[in-house]
Length: 140
Length: 240
Image 1: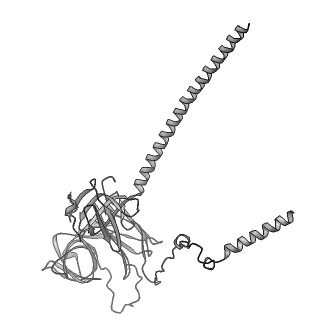
Image 2: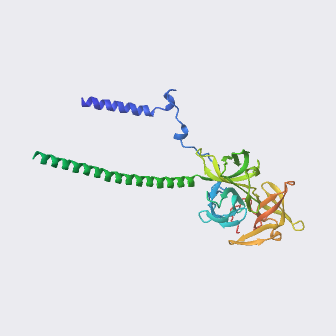
Image 3: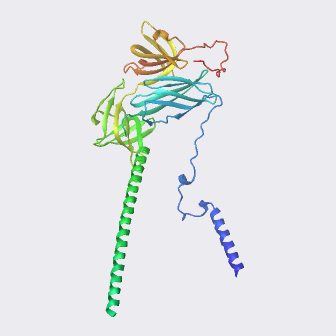
């Protein structure tokens, strides 16, 4: 009796595992299609970067960042030792990236939208980013 | 005897009834207090959550006005579009080139101009319900190497990624040099051929090759590459 139950459970479990392993496209059209975007993580498109290119990643601020102070620290990462320039419509400042390439530049912004120009200079190489930040004094 | 027993039983019955009623009243009072506390706790948690959501849903966006109606607008920046909803509670302002703010109305916002919206994200997670709308035209950004300085004309020319452009140096032009984190003012005479300049400009509407320099960050050329230098030696750091 117990042996029969055990064998039944074993066979049933094995069949369930096998069924779960069968690819979905082999199961026929009666299976509802699943939303791939919820199950498969998006594949980032590769950005070809030559080994010698001067990279410049802005950590803060993000594009269209809402800020509530008129002075912010533009931070990010570039080539170690590179000179980084940040300009807004009312201020300019430079800083040198440290040995890890990290930089932080204080800069003053205007009420409303500001297009920040951030440039990394290393020798004759130059890379730039333009980031919009929006500053408001009123409480939202 | 039967009467006495009956009276005693009656008294006991009345006492037990009153005890039950008292107990019920006490428990009702404590239940009411508990419910009130729960309601107050829920109110506080709801208010906190609303404040958190409001903080999370704060949004701003700057872009060109692509579409406009009496109740909505679409702003476009690069390839991103944001729908904006306006209502009676929206406040409108205009910011001029000097950064001065003045009152404005929805009618003063025109297609093709630029605007900045501040507000809360709607339930669709895309539309911004505008609390504040700013009409503002930002100065253009340019940078490049100086190729010519004409002090008589009060101008200098740069070669940028967009081509050659001549910039008028005017009274209000602000030129800055930064050395060792110290900012110093400079003038047209400080600019020499080969310098790198990072600019905010006001382009000439009639002549695309000419503009007014509003702000200049001057990075003097400290090292002139010799003709014999290797063209691949681009990794030496530039001392600023």
